[in-house]
Amino acid sequence: MAGIVSYGFYIPKSRIRIGDIAKVWGKEEKNISASLKVQEKTVAGIDEDALTMAYESSTMAFSDVAIDKRKIGAVYVGSESHPYAVNPTSTILAEMLGIHGSYLASDTEFACKAATGALISGLGLINSKMADYVLVAASDKAQSMPHDVLEYTASSASVSLIMGRQDLLLKIIDYSTFSTDTPDFWRRDGIRYPSHGGRFTGQPAYFYHIYNASTDLLTKTKLKPEKFAHAVFHMPNGKFPIQIAYKLGFDFNQLKQSLVVEKLGNSYTASALLGLVSVLEVAKKGDLIFFASFGSGAGSDAFVFQVTDNIIQRRKRLSVSINDKKYIDYATYLKFMDVI
Image (cartoon, rainbow, N blue to C red):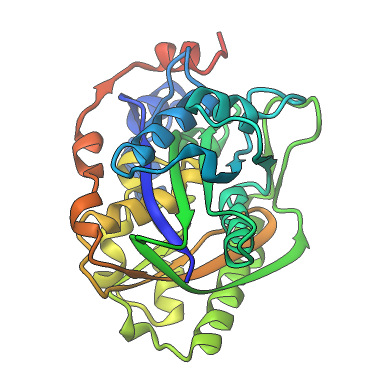
Protein backbone atom coordinates (compact mmCIF):
# COMPACT_ATOMS: atom_id res chain seq x y z
CA MET A 1 0.00 0.00 0.00
CA ALA A 2 1.32 3.44 -0.90
CA GLY A 3 1.20 6.38 1.44
CA ILE A 4 3.09 9.17 3.17
CA VAL A 5 6.51 8.34 4.61
CA SER A 6 7.30 11.77 6.05
CA TYR A 7 6.13 15.36 5.95
CA GLY A 8 7.42 18.85 6.60
CA PHE A 9 6.02 22.36 6.72
CA TYR A 10 7.10 25.97 6.73
CA ILE A 11 5.15 29.03 7.82
CA PRO A 12 6.71 32.52 7.77
CA LYS A 13 7.29 34.17 11.10
CA SER A 14 5.76 37.51 10.03
CA ARG A 15 2.02 38.01 10.61
CA ILE A 16 -0.43 40.80 10.02
CA ARG A 17 -3.63 41.22 12.00
CA ILE A 18 -6.80 41.36 9.94
CA GLY A 19 -7.84 44.36 12.00
CA ASP A 20 -4.79 46.31 10.80
CA ILE A 21 -5.81 45.73 7.18
CA ALA A 22 -9.41 46.69 7.94
CA LYS A 23 -8.39 49.98 9.58
CA VAL A 24 -6.48 51.09 6.48
CA TRP A 25 -9.64 50.76 4.39
CA GLY A 26 -12.02 52.20 6.97
CA LYS A 27 -13.66 48.87 7.76
CA GLU A 28 -14.83 47.56 11.11
CA GLU A 29 -12.45 44.85 12.33
CA LYS A 30 -15.18 42.93 14.16
CA ASN A 31 -17.32 42.75 11.01
CA ILE A 32 -14.48 41.41 8.86
CA SER A 33 -13.26 38.89 11.45
CA ALA A 34 -16.78 37.68 12.22
CA SER A 35 -17.55 37.27 8.53
CA LEU A 36 -14.39 35.36 7.64
CA LYS A 37 -13.49 33.82 11.03
CA VAL A 38 -9.85 34.82 10.47
CA GLN A 39 -7.86 36.85 13.01
CA GLU A 40 -4.43 37.10 11.36
CA LYS A 41 -2.42 35.63 8.50
CA THR A 42 1.14 34.68 7.62
CA VAL A 43 3.21 36.97 5.39
CA ALA A 44 6.24 35.73 3.46
CA GLY A 45 9.26 38.02 3.58
CA ILE A 46 10.46 40.13 0.66
CA ASP A 47 13.18 37.52 0.05
CA GLU A 48 10.80 34.53 0.23
CA ASP A 49 8.72 32.89 -2.47
CA ALA A 50 7.07 29.55 -3.26
CA LEU A 51 10.47 28.00 -4.03
CA THR A 52 12.28 29.04 -0.84
CA MET A 53 9.34 27.92 1.29
CA ALA A 54 9.13 24.59 -0.56
CA TYR A 55 12.81 24.07 0.19
CA GLU A 56 12.24 24.69 3.91
CA SER A 57 9.29 22.28 4.16
CA SER A 58 11.04 19.63 2.05
CA THR A 59 14.19 19.83 4.17
CA MET A 60 12.07 19.17 7.24
CA ALA A 61 10.41 16.21 5.52
CA PHE A 62 13.80 14.63 4.77
CA SER A 63 15.18 15.36 8.25
CA ASP A 64 13.77 12.32 10.05
CA VAL A 65 13.97 9.60 7.37
CA ALA A 66 17.02 7.96 5.84
CA ILE A 67 16.12 7.95 2.15
CA ASP A 68 18.62 7.55 -0.67
CA LYS A 69 17.75 10.56 -2.81
CA ARG A 70 18.70 8.58 -5.92
CA LYS A 71 15.46 6.68 -5.28
CA ILE A 72 13.30 9.81 -5.56
CA GLY A 73 11.51 9.07 -8.83
CA ALA A 74 9.53 12.31 -9.12
CA VAL A 75 9.44 15.84 -7.71
CA TYR A 76 6.16 17.74 -7.99
CA VAL A 77 5.63 21.34 -6.89
CA GLY A 78 2.00 22.47 -6.71
CA SER A 79 1.52 26.24 -6.60
CA GLU A 80 -0.32 29.15 -8.14
CA SER A 81 2.57 31.52 -7.41
CA HIS A 82 5.53 29.83 -9.10
CA PRO A 83 8.49 32.26 -9.20
CA TYR A 84 8.87 31.84 -12.97
CA ALA A 85 6.20 31.78 -15.66
CA VAL A 86 8.62 29.71 -17.76
CA ASN A 87 11.31 27.77 -15.84
CA PRO A 88 10.22 24.98 -13.51
CA THR A 89 10.23 25.34 -9.75
CA SER A 90 10.54 21.56 -9.39
CA THR A 91 13.99 21.27 -10.99
CA ILE A 92 15.40 24.12 -8.90
CA LEU A 93 13.96 22.59 -5.73
CA ALA A 94 15.39 19.17 -6.59
CA GLU A 95 18.83 20.67 -7.24
CA MET A 96 18.74 22.52 -3.92
CA LEU A 97 17.83 19.27 -2.13
CA GLY A 98 20.56 17.22 -3.83
CA ILE A 99 18.23 15.23 -6.08
CA HIS A 100 19.91 14.74 -9.45
CA GLY A 101 19.34 13.17 -12.83
CA SER A 102 16.85 10.38 -13.28
CA TYR A 103 13.68 11.83 -11.82
CA LEU A 104 10.46 13.26 -13.23
CA ALA A 105 10.13 16.98 -12.51
CA SER A 106 6.77 18.68 -12.85
CA ASP A 107 5.15 21.93 -11.76
CA THR A 108 1.42 21.53 -11.25
CA GLU A 109 -1.35 24.12 -11.22
CA PHE A 110 -5.02 23.78 -10.26
CA ALA A 111 -5.51 26.70 -7.90
CA CYS A 112 -5.56 25.47 -4.29
CA LYS A 113 -5.60 21.75 -5.13
CA ALA A 114 -2.49 21.71 -7.34
CA ALA A 115 -0.57 19.58 -4.84
CA THR A 116 -3.30 17.07 -4.07
CA GLY A 117 -3.63 16.38 -7.79
CA ALA A 118 0.13 15.72 -7.75
CA LEU A 119 -0.41 13.40 -4.79
CA ILE A 120 -2.70 11.27 -6.96
CA SER A 121 -0.09 11.26 -9.74
CA GLY A 122 2.55 10.18 -7.24
CA LEU A 123 0.25 7.45 -6.01
CA GLY A 124 0.06 6.07 -9.53
CA LEU A 125 3.84 6.06 -9.93
CA ILE A 126 4.38 4.27 -6.64
CA ASN A 127 1.58 1.72 -7.00
CA SER A 128 2.82 0.84 -10.50
CA LYS A 129 6.37 0.52 -9.08
CA MET A 130 7.65 3.12 -11.52
CA ALA A 131 9.07 5.07 -8.57
CA ASP A 132 10.23 4.12 -5.07
CA TYR A 133 9.64 7.59 -3.61
CA VAL A 134 7.91 10.76 -4.76
CA LEU A 135 8.26 14.26 -3.29
CA VAL A 136 5.19 16.50 -3.44
CA ALA A 137 5.51 20.12 -2.30
CA ALA A 138 2.60 22.54 -1.90
CA SER A 139 3.80 26.11 -1.64
CA ASP A 140 2.30 29.55 -2.19
CA LYS A 141 3.02 33.20 -1.58
CA ALA A 142 -0.57 34.11 -2.26
CA GLN A 143 -1.27 37.39 -4.04
CA SER A 144 -4.32 39.60 -3.61
CA MET A 145 -5.27 43.00 -4.90
CA PRO A 146 -5.21 45.68 -2.18
CA HIS A 147 -8.72 46.42 -0.89
CA ASP A 148 -10.06 43.14 -2.31
CA VAL A 149 -11.72 40.69 0.09
CA LEU A 150 -8.90 38.21 -0.66
CA GLU A 151 -6.46 40.59 1.04
CA TYR A 152 -7.88 39.58 4.42
CA THR A 153 -7.11 35.89 3.95
CA ALA A 154 -4.45 35.25 1.23
CA SER A 155 -1.33 34.08 3.06
CA SER A 156 1.91 32.14 2.63
CA ALA A 157 3.11 28.67 3.65
CA SER A 158 4.43 25.37 2.37
CA VAL A 159 3.87 21.67 3.11
CA SER A 160 5.94 18.83 1.64
CA LEU A 161 5.10 15.12 1.58
CA ILE A 162 7.42 12.21 0.80
CA MET A 163 5.45 9.31 -0.67
CA GLY A 164 6.51 5.68 -0.71
CA ARG A 165 5.51 2.07 -0.09
CA GLN A 166 7.45 1.15 3.04
CA ASP A 167 7.78 2.49 6.57
CA LEU A 168 4.65 4.60 6.15
CA LEU A 169 3.42 7.33 8.45
CA LEU A 170 0.03 7.56 6.70
CA LYS A 171 -1.57 4.88 4.58
CA ILE A 172 -3.66 6.13 1.68
CA ILE A 173 -6.73 3.89 1.92
CA ASP A 174 -8.50 5.37 -1.11
CA TYR A 175 -9.27 8.60 -2.93
CA SER A 176 -11.90 10.20 -5.15
CA THR A 177 -11.83 13.28 -7.33
CA PHE A 178 -14.52 15.49 -8.87
CA SER A 179 -14.07 18.30 -11.42
CA THR A 180 -16.11 20.64 -13.61
CA ASP A 181 -15.53 23.79 -15.65
CA THR A 182 -16.64 26.30 -13.00
CA PRO A 183 -14.77 29.62 -13.35
CA ASP A 184 -15.17 30.93 -9.81
CA PHE A 185 -11.60 32.27 -9.56
CA TRP A 186 -9.07 33.09 -12.29
CA ARG A 187 -6.03 35.09 -13.33
CA ARG A 188 -5.26 35.78 -16.98
CA ASP A 189 -1.70 35.51 -18.25
CA GLY A 190 0.19 38.73 -17.56
CA ILE A 191 -2.32 39.94 -14.97
CA ARG A 192 -0.81 40.29 -11.51
CA TYR A 193 -3.80 39.68 -9.26
CA PRO A 194 -6.52 37.04 -9.40
CA SER A 195 -10.19 37.80 -9.91
CA HIS A 196 -13.11 35.96 -8.36
CA GLY A 197 -16.84 35.57 -8.65
CA GLY A 198 -17.70 36.76 -5.14
CA ARG A 199 -20.47 34.65 -3.66
CA PHE A 200 -20.32 32.44 -6.75
CA THR A 201 -17.16 30.92 -5.22
CA GLY A 202 -19.31 29.30 -2.52
CA GLN A 203 -22.21 27.04 -3.41
CA PRO A 204 -21.50 26.31 -7.12
CA ALA A 205 -17.76 25.96 -6.53
CA TYR A 206 -16.43 25.07 -3.08
CA PHE A 207 -19.46 23.28 -1.62
CA TYR A 208 -20.60 21.51 -4.79
CA HIS A 209 -17.20 20.02 -5.61
CA ILE A 210 -16.14 19.00 -2.10
CA TYR A 211 -19.55 17.48 -1.45
CA ASN A 212 -19.43 15.38 -4.61
CA ALA A 213 -15.83 14.20 -4.16
CA SER A 214 -16.49 13.42 -0.49
CA THR A 215 -19.78 11.57 -0.94
CA ASP A 216 -18.25 9.58 -3.80
CA LEU A 217 -15.40 8.53 -1.51
CA LEU A 218 -17.64 7.67 1.43
CA THR A 219 -19.77 5.52 -0.86
CA LYS A 220 -16.72 3.91 -2.45
CA THR A 221 -15.13 2.98 0.90
CA LYS A 222 -18.45 2.24 2.65
CA LEU A 223 -17.26 4.34 5.57
CA LYS A 224 -19.57 6.55 7.64
CA PRO A 225 -18.47 9.99 8.93
CA GLU A 226 -18.56 8.74 12.54
CA LYS A 227 -15.76 6.25 11.75
CA PHE A 228 -13.23 9.07 11.36
CA ALA A 229 -11.20 10.51 14.20
CA HIS A 230 -10.50 13.69 12.24
CA ALA A 231 -11.79 15.57 9.19
CA VAL A 232 -9.87 18.15 7.16
CA PHE A 233 -11.24 20.46 4.46
CA HIS A 234 -9.73 23.25 2.40
CA MET A 235 -9.92 26.54 4.32
CA PRO A 236 -10.53 29.64 2.18
CA ASN A 237 -11.95 31.14 5.38
CA GLY A 238 -13.05 29.86 8.77
CA LYS A 239 -16.73 29.32 7.91
CA PHE A 240 -16.71 27.17 4.77
CA PRO A 241 -14.98 24.08 6.23
CA ILE A 242 -17.39 24.01 9.17
CA GLN A 243 -20.40 24.28 6.89
CA ILE A 244 -19.29 21.51 4.52
CA ALA A 245 -18.30 19.27 7.43
CA TYR A 246 -21.78 19.52 8.92
CA LYS A 247 -23.41 18.97 5.53
CA LEU A 248 -21.44 15.72 5.12
CA GLY A 249 -22.26 14.47 8.61
CA PHE A 250 -19.05 15.27 10.48
CA ASP A 251 -19.16 17.08 13.83
CA PHE A 252 -17.06 19.93 15.18
CA ASN A 253 -14.94 17.68 17.42
CA GLN A 254 -13.71 15.84 14.32
CA LEU A 255 -12.92 19.11 12.57
CA LYS A 256 -11.58 21.47 15.22
CA GLN A 257 -7.93 20.35 15.24
CA SER A 258 -7.60 21.12 11.53
CA LEU A 259 -8.96 24.68 11.71
CA VAL A 260 -5.69 26.62 11.55
CA VAL A 261 -7.04 29.24 9.14
CA GLU A 262 -7.96 31.61 11.97
CA LYS A 263 -4.28 32.11 12.84
CA LEU A 264 -2.61 31.41 9.46
CA GLY A 265 -5.02 32.57 6.76
CA ASN A 266 -5.55 30.78 3.46
CA SER A 267 -2.18 29.66 2.08
CA TYR A 268 -3.82 28.31 -1.09
CA THR A 269 -2.14 24.99 -2.09
CA ALA A 270 -0.80 24.54 1.45
CA SER A 271 -4.09 25.40 3.18
CA ALA A 272 -5.79 22.01 3.53
CA LEU A 273 -2.43 20.26 3.99
CA LEU A 274 -1.63 22.53 6.95
CA GLY A 275 -4.89 21.31 8.45
CA LEU A 276 -3.62 17.75 7.98
CA VAL A 277 -0.28 18.68 9.58
CA SER A 278 -2.15 20.08 12.57
CA VAL A 279 -4.18 16.87 12.89
CA LEU A 280 -0.99 14.78 12.83
CA GLU A 281 0.18 16.65 15.93
CA VAL A 282 -2.48 14.82 17.97
CA ALA A 283 -3.39 11.78 15.84
CA LYS A 284 -3.00 8.25 17.17
CA LYS A 285 -2.15 4.92 15.58
CA GLY A 286 -5.14 3.52 13.70
CA ASP A 287 -6.96 6.85 13.41
CA LEU A 288 -8.85 7.37 10.15
CA ILE A 289 -8.56 10.88 8.70
CA PHE A 290 -10.96 12.25 6.09
CA PHE A 291 -9.36 14.90 3.88
CA ALA A 292 -10.75 16.99 1.00
CA SER A 293 -9.00 19.73 -0.92
CA PHE A 294 -10.57 22.27 -3.27
CA GLY A 295 -9.22 24.13 -6.27
CA SER A 296 -11.04 26.83 -8.17
CA GLY A 297 -11.82 26.20 -11.78
CA ALA A 298 -13.02 23.82 -10.20
CA GLY A 299 -12.37 20.51 -8.47
CA SER A 300 -11.88 18.58 -5.27
CA ASP A 301 -9.65 15.63 -4.30
CA ALA A 302 -10.79 13.59 -1.30
CA PHE A 303 -8.67 11.02 0.57
CA VAL A 304 -8.99 8.54 3.39
CA PHE A 305 -5.76 8.31 5.40
CA GLN A 306 -4.94 5.92 8.22
CA VAL A 307 -2.28 6.72 10.81
CA THR A 308 0.43 4.16 11.59
CA ASP A 309 2.60 3.79 14.69
CA ASN A 310 5.41 5.73 12.96
CA ILE A 311 3.56 8.90 13.95
CA ILE A 312 5.25 8.73 17.35
CA GLN A 313 8.77 9.18 15.95
CA ARG A 314 7.91 11.56 13.10
CA ARG A 315 5.36 13.90 14.64
CA LYS A 316 6.04 17.60 14.05
CA ARG A 317 4.76 20.49 16.16
CA LEU A 318 2.92 22.97 13.99
CA SER A 319 1.55 24.67 17.10
CA VAL A 320 5.06 25.80 18.05
CA SER A 321 5.53 27.54 14.70
CA ILE A 322 2.05 29.09 14.89
CA ASN A 323 2.99 30.75 18.17
CA ASP A 324 6.47 31.81 16.99
CA LYS A 325 5.50 35.04 15.24
CA LYS A 326 6.28 38.69 14.70
CA TYR A 327 3.57 41.21 13.82
CA ILE A 328 4.15 43.69 11.01
CA ASP A 329 2.20 46.79 9.99
CA TYR A 330 0.35 47.31 6.71
CA ALA A 331 3.14 49.31 5.06
CA THR A 332 5.64 46.53 5.79
CA TYR A 333 3.13 44.00 4.48
CA LEU A 334 2.93 45.88 1.15
CA LYS A 335 6.72 45.95 0.98
CA PHE A 336 7.01 42.22 1.64
CA MET A 337 4.40 41.52 -1.04
CA ASP A 338 6.32 43.74 -3.49
CA VAL A 339 3.43 46.16 -3.87
CA ILE A 340 5.54 49.20 -2.92
